[in-house]
Image (cartoon, rainbow, N blue to C red; front, side):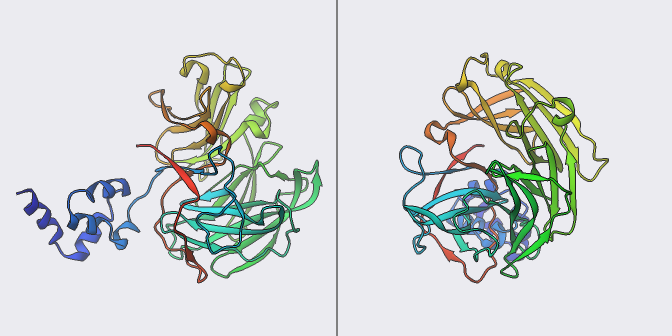
Length: 380
């Protein structure tokens, strides 16, 4: 009887099945694959998977060696000549890697964009404006899988004058488009003395890149480099002593979030939201004491927590830290804390929120990799 029910569904016209199942979230599709072979084939259909609604599925961690250090061999990019790799930007299912070609030198570097879901990767052409061996160059990947073209872009902040080595005044941007395969320069319109550094925090949504600056502003630019804006963060008005390293931005439910944990006030968390299409006013959305939530007081460096992401569809944020180096989810509606995973050696390596994308990379130079360069920390 159960098998006949499965056959009734799978015997429906193919176009109708695609229309129905493309509305099912990807996690539910994965569960349906366990019902039978026919359901497994149906729920694995690329035409369905590509259209399936996606949300945050977990976090990408750099796998590294047994001590959590970067792997000396590029396990996935086997045909590349790189010798050490490090992920440093991620956007809507794509990951940008910096690959050093020789283990003893950082002067020869490739930049690689990969899609873990489709196991595709492609190497970017050299940027003519970057100095050889500049490991502090700020590259940011942007990708919108809902767009018809499905092309990605990479932004490189072009320094004008370096300040204290790690900070520079941004004179403009070099923008790479996978559609044209070329880098183009766009002169900055953020105004004079706009500084960026390699610790820049960024989010991308609605066709706009949002990034933090050392003076606690959010600078924005569209994918074409035509619309430039600068927004003051709420921290600069309320707590002028807050530094860029303590501030964090994220995207959730159509709003831009600005967050901060005050280690001098019982690890107090403050969350502001900004409706980017509204009146451009920051609204204090939530406050809580991290120490009280975790039922212990701040008593040393191991009790520091770092904000790493906001859930795109829920009032939930994610942190790392604590005595055991945990990855933690905090539900702002219920004020419940959930430990997702003890990170141990992974606690100090790059970590990115991961939303699967099954859109094929559009560039003709794409190749396939066999093994992943990273681990996952999944949650339900």
